[in-house]
Image (cartoon, rainbow, N blue to C red):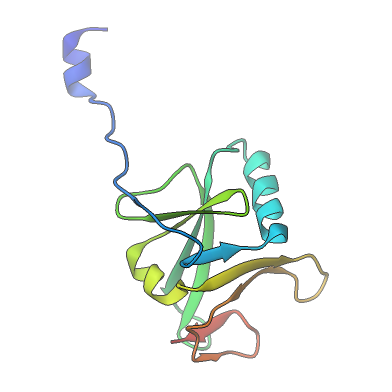
Length: 130
């Protein structure tokens, strides 16, 4: 490798994130097992679950979840239930104190967020307002 190659392709800087705790978000054992299974299936057992709040849904806000390699700049990183969860600062305002659960059922199953900050939720349970 030439010095020019190093200068042209500097190593990426590590993400500048903050470590949080379960007061931000807590993961139940069933949700943690499901996330571990999904991460393993994607071939990234050291990955993270991103939980975000975005505009949309019947009540104005909805949750978005995604599996990623690691935290991004300014994220909060929480270890809960043996998995790592990342939350961006804006979403942290809405999810503080929440619990992420997973229900394995034909109807009404999937990931569920119990959020004490939700003023109202829609009848389908997929969106909320704060």
